[in-house]
Length: 115
Image 1 (cartoon, rainbow, N blue to C red):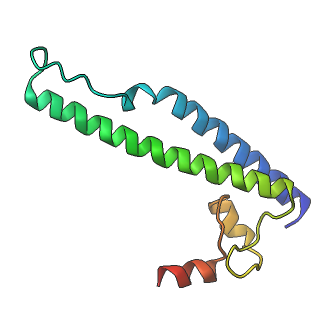
Image 2 (image 1 turned 120 degrees about the vertical axis):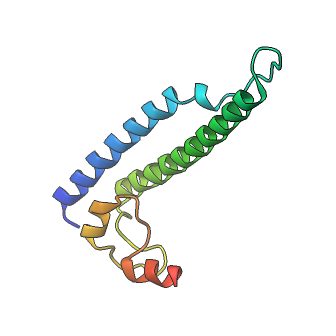
């Protein structure tokens, strides 16, 4: 991976990190506990609220996980460890990294894990 590719990846990862941080900051209210004040809302409304809360919590968990992957990729870029497969140590195709800049496996190893 040449220096231009590395800069492009760092810019993309940084932009993704900022986007996720903003999303997480704005989604905090949706995952807060649902008030179960029975007289004020009906049973179906409470169930809808609980389902919405669970979905928001899962979305938030996934976003936090993605943020960790982005942070690791940025750290790897700074340490010149970016773009190498965690399993075989070979180069990850730059085309794969353009699709998913947080990819940790080359295509061959990723396919082996799925099989």
